[in-house]
Length: 370
Image (tube, rainbow, N blue to C red; front, side):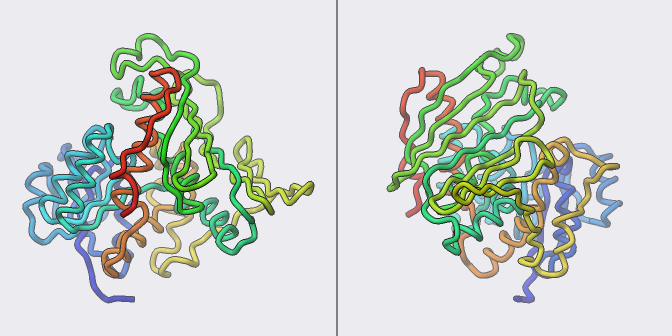
């Protein structure tokens, strides 16, 4: 492993604090700076983790020539502007999901990344979760056979989350459901068709102009005979949290458990069996392997995203290592800017399709790999 160290700045600490000890433990990272508007909270976190460089102003942070990577964990409506600003300032940029809140903003990020030549990575947790890594490993070994169909869902109750989430179109924040369907076989979305069903409380309609309770999309894969079915809900559905994907293949098929802790199922012909998905900490440097099972958040110190997502499948150290390794070895991370845009725009355009009665909408060509 390279001895090179990159200076990390984490922006947004409500969820972002989870990554501080991971970067501190990684051989190729120096946890250099943190940024949050609330100075009291900023100093509390800085003192806890002994991070000396602290900013309440994002623009001032970007002026710091010592920063190599900006890792953004702020509210979704801030992602595009902050990512573009980081890239234009000559920093590598990593950002939590979604990439942006509009197709136009996704394009801005793709253009800024390509113009800057810096690395961008959308920090999508599901494609580094232990369940995904398990199925991906079996598929890459040929044990699953030919991909035939994929299905995914992300259903949660976001009551009590910050107000900017209220009334959000379900597919605007669907990357957790869309990404594994595309990533398993290395595919890209070509077109989407989506329907909306049911209605959320009328008081939540005004903010985004969206009435739908559930949105369900069919995604056509580019240069492929495959489709994926993706379902997303955020409010007014009585259901336990579920962030799932099913992979149907010619030899084996993987199905996510219907309820938490009930066990995932692998089908081999007529012989289904429950499978225990292993942890994939062995793929990581020893210094951060422990973070697949324990991080900042636990039963006594929770964050809604982390708690509802079941710890995000042990993905956080994998995300950190992928980002750092890609930059040091001058390769593209997954998902890079175009891949992140393809995943995110699939959701945004699915909502547009639902608002137009299920109209088929093509993905822009700039979301396809070169």
